[in-house]
Length: 147
Image 1: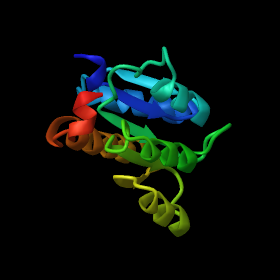
Image 2: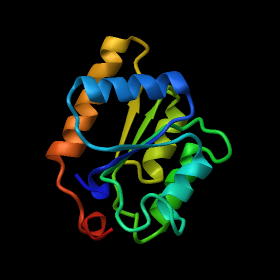
Image 3: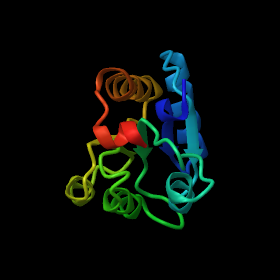
């Protein structure tokens, strides 16, 4: 697997990060996972010279909304503002079920909006479904292939 097969998980909550990583492993999703713990780190990881994805984009971004430094919606706005990352699949994976957050996420170009279940079994199944669809079934867009 290459960097372009990677998943970028943007999650500041250590517990949710651990649950997500555990669920991906449990369901045999083999893609490399890069974790950014706040919005600023996510943008550096994607855009900075020497950043992890400087040459090849990840296959998917799982983006929490409630992040320190730079919020998830601002990260999404930055991703959609650059030609290189405009088609990069971004799934908002958050605890917020607020209608305004859902609407705003889609207005800004999220590909999907998923509310994190509290129960681990349900959470694990959600992560499996998201991972299977976006990492196995979904065809990558032309910009994402070029990186």
